[in-house]
Image (cartoon, rainbow, N blue to C red; front, top):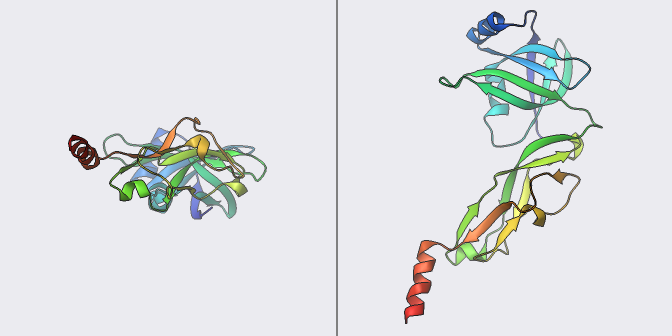
Length: 192
C-alpha cells in the first residue's frame, strides 16, 4: 500500500477559537486516535491534498515532534459552502489489528460484449475491505475479459485473498447491458 508522509504540530489549546486561528494560518485541526491516547495536532491543508484528493487508497505516515505513526484517514469535515477542510480524523494502524477501508475497483481486460455494442456499467467504484494493514490491497482487480451482453459480476464472484470484502454478496460490481443501438439493431433484425 502506498504511504504518504505528512508532518503535524501538537496543539496546546483545543477549542473553537484555536481551530479558527489554525484555519486562518492554512492549517486544519486533526486528531489521531486508536492508540493508548488521543493526540490533537495541526497539519497544513496543502500537505493533505495528495492524501485526500485522490481516487486511490493510501496509508498516511504522520510525524509529530519527531515521532512517526502510521495511520489512515477515517473522517473528513468540510465547510458546506466554501469546501475548505475543517477537521481530519486519523486512525492509528497496528500490525495485529484489522482495519476497514474503501478500496478502489480496477477493471482489467476488454469485454467481448462491449465490442459487440453492449454498454459497460460499473456500479461500485470502491469496495469495503477488512484486513490487516500488511494484507490491505492497493486496488481490487476485476477482469471483464469474458463478459458478454447481459452478464454481471457480483461481490460474491470476486476471488478471495488475504482480505475480506464486507459489501453484500448480491451487490453488482460491473455489468454489460444492452445499448440502445444494439436493441434497435435486434428489433430491426426481428422484423425482417
